[in-house]
View (cartoon, rainbow, N blue to C red):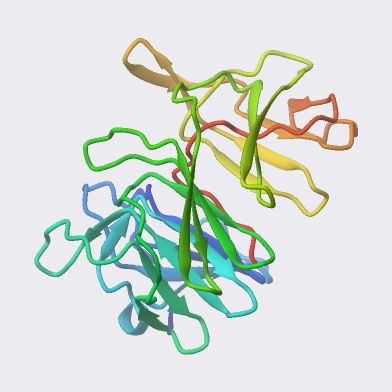
Length: 275
């Protein structure tokens, strides 16, 4: 394990997971168009210079077995294993070759493996995101196939039982962000709510969301379609407030009605809550 100063390529389409105070990054597409097999982390428990962050590079001994981009990861805290699902996978032949939907990274041994998962696997996909609950179930929504036809289902990967479950939705339209689809992880059913907002919030794709310790969800960035062109959606930063609290400092807009609201679209890159 080495601490290194990276040549800062402009990364996108990487996967990330927060483990304690360490933010892990896996793969990604560089500004030269190539996906990478890099694995590195940033220790956020200590102050550092933002210009030259002290990245810890694990690639030499714990790099991905393939070059990966547009995948998603979730962290099982009890197992101390990070699971990587989907995305583009380029093996040493440089071909986009499919071997398994899911790969696991053991944080204690720094070893990658392919879990032996029961049941019929979901169709391979990319541009997905996931969250994991406290029972070890990893929820993966939507995404695209390699022809960029979108999926509209919920794939559930049980990291404890090592099994798949797929639950679909009827609506296949990109919706306004105020129309909220809620997924009940107990009944495995979908429901719909309409959010009341204090100001105009544009629908979007390619945004990022993170769950704060106080239960609020902070949504940042994203784009909307103007014809066939993607342009910046506004506002750039807003929060979902479940408890009708006042807006957080420096955050321009928040949902204020106390109802449950979720972003409605696939998120290419997102820090995940751990199990």
